[in-house]
Image (cartoon, rainbow, N blue to C red; front, side, top):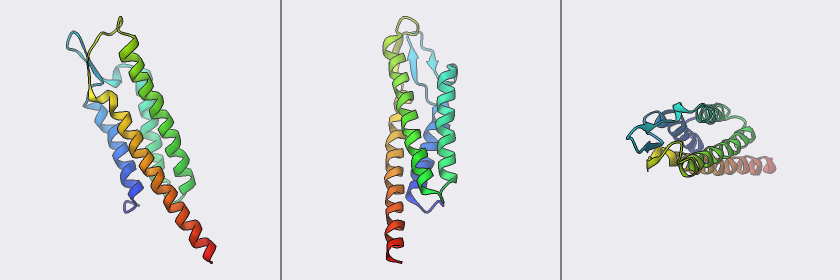
Amino acid sequence: MIQRIQTVYLLLTFLITGVLLFFIPLWTSNTGKSFYFMQDQLYTILLGLSTMLTIVSIISYKKRQNQFVLGRLNIILNLILLGLFVYRSLNLSGETQVSEKGIGMFLPIVAIVLLVLANKAIKKDEDLVKSVDRLR
């Protein structure tokens, strides 16, 4: 159901985690080589899971409670991903010397904000349905 605002938020999250990170590097090394998420298997798996959870959440629009739980799981997954990005860029300077952090490293923050907004809208819909059921 595209007319619901949480679906729009979830579609934007899908664009960020599933599409945008293919084109935006996470960081650039001192040699000028860009590092994309596909160069590390752990990042690929976590971003794939995040994208899959977003798609499943969009598809399960009739089950608002499941959609809410999937959104929370996706938030946790993106927080883990963000932590790994920050850890890699700050602590592993001997292995990969980061000269410039790309905006791709901070895209999980945007995804988390959009997921929080989507969960807020899902909760609002759920409360509305419960209030209507009480009137019957």
